[in-house]
Every structure is written in structure tokens, then in C-alpha cells.
Image 1 (cartoon, rainbow, N blue to C red):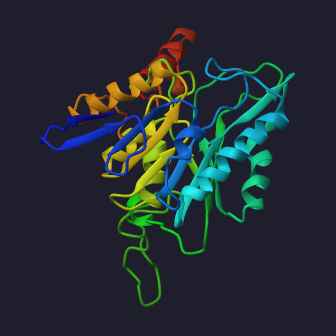
Image 2 (cartoon, helix red, strand yellow):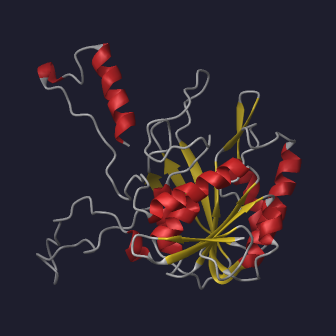
Amino acid sequence: MVEVYRDIFGNEIKVGDEFDPTSDVVLYNGDTLELLRQIPDSLAELVVTSPPYNIGKPYEKKISLNDYLQQQEKVIEEAIRITKPEGSICWQVGNYVENGRIIPLDILLFPIFDKYGLKLRNRIVWHFGHGLHARKRFSGRYEVILWFTKTDNYIFNLDAVRVPQKYPNKKYYKGPKKGLLSGHPLGKNPSDVWEIPNVKSNHPEKTIHPAQFPVELVERLILALTNKGGWVVDPFIGVGTTAIAALLHNRKAAGADIVKEYIDIAKERIKLLLEGKLKIRPMGKPIYTPTRNRDNDRESNTLFDLYVKEESHAESI
């Protein structure tokens, strides 16, 4: 079935529940392999996802690590098949936790991608400020995006994702360019460490999904690694964040989730987006930093002040 939505300009947006190349978005309620097998070879410019971490979230059943990796390999194999030669695959993962020890999933998954001949371009570190507080180890505040390409001839639009220069007025002090600005006029390369707030309780994008990633994280990958009109596929699409990022930038999107409620939320979020009502943290918005209390050059006068600042930080992202 295909539903037809309209954006604020009256343009039709087709949202289907089975793969159809004429749709703008495909949201499949079921096993991801069932959707991926509907997709033709070499269709997607980008496959990007955050798969289950096998840590017992409500949408997953915890299984042995070997079984988990075998399941992941089946999905990865299909992801490679549907990706264009000039396309990319981005796998965003954290850690598998067992009896208090952590096992980085990117380290376990890398050999699978390597076996199929993919080329790792970056191991992007996504750093965020909030999370569970550990008592017997340092609190985890990052996850990893493995960015692979199929070939050496791949889409990479750096200018689309440049960020402001740290010293925008810096100039060459000698040589033939003396006095000219030394930085790129469009900004600098964002590097392989990205500081983007994660989706916690006070984040404007928060839904019921327990492991939702922010739109901005996917936006940067879509802008850099795809062109307008290209397909973006998310094998574990959850509440539709990847589809929202794709639509924001005139791309098409397809994804699957076994939880019908998540697919329903994804459709509702897309409707709100097209109506101009969806709350999204703007791409590139600076992370809020509390101002210093100048009284005696202290950060705060009381523990209550510190608590209020922390709450304000959470509410501002």
C-alpha cells in the first residue's frame, strides 16, 4: 500500500510499506532481510544504520555473541549488494556489555566488512555529553560510525558538511599569500570526531524509542555521501530518523523495523515534517555551555546552582 502525503508546497510524497522505486519513502514493518531482498542490486548511494547492540533492549532478544555476528553478517551482505559502486555503508555501533566488561562492536564487525572487500575510510567517533553513569569504570560518552566504501571512486561532498573555522580571521603571515585568509572560505573539515547531543529525555526529537539517534548525525552522512535524488537505506530504521534526514535534503529513503508502533511513529513524524511542525534540533546548532558565575570566579555558588545548570543544559539541546 502507498499513502500519498503533501508537503507545505503541495508536492506529493509517496510513502509505501513495500519497496517500490516510485515511492519517496518505504517503511516496512517486518524483518529487515525481507525488505532488503526486495531492493534491486546497486540502488542505494548510502546504507546507514544503528543496528541492535544485543544488550536486551525492548525491541531485541539477547542472544550469544556469535549468533549476533552471524545475524549481522546476513544484513551486511545484503547491504553490500544493494549499494552502488560509488556508494557508502555506515554502521553506527556502541559496545556489547557482559558481566561488567565491554566489547567494542566495531572491532568485532570490521572483519566482516573487510572479508567482503569494503574499504574503511573513517572510524568516526560520535561524542555526546549525557548517558548512564558508571561506578566501576569511566562513564561511556561516545559511539562509533564505521564508514566503508565499495570502491575508490566514491561520493564525498565535503563542502556540504564543512563547519565554522576555529579562527575564521586567521591570515597567512608571510609568502605570496601574506595577508590573505588562510582557512577555507566555506569552513573546515569536521574531522572524525563529532560532538552532537544524543537523544535523551529533554531532546526535542525524543520519542518512545529507547535508542534513537539524532537527525543531525544522519544529516551529515547523507549530505556528504549522497547526491540529491539518491536512495538512502536504513535496515533498522526505528522511528524514521534516517527517512526524515533524507527528506530534508531531497533524497529517498527505505527502512524496516519489526515493531509496528515504531513504524507508525515514523509515519507520524514524516507527516509533521511535511507540515513544517516536526521539532528537530537544527544541524550545526552550538552545544549549550552554561555561563560562568563571576562571583569570586567560581562556576556556581551552590550545589543547587550546579543542578540547575545541568538541567538547563539538558533542556537546551
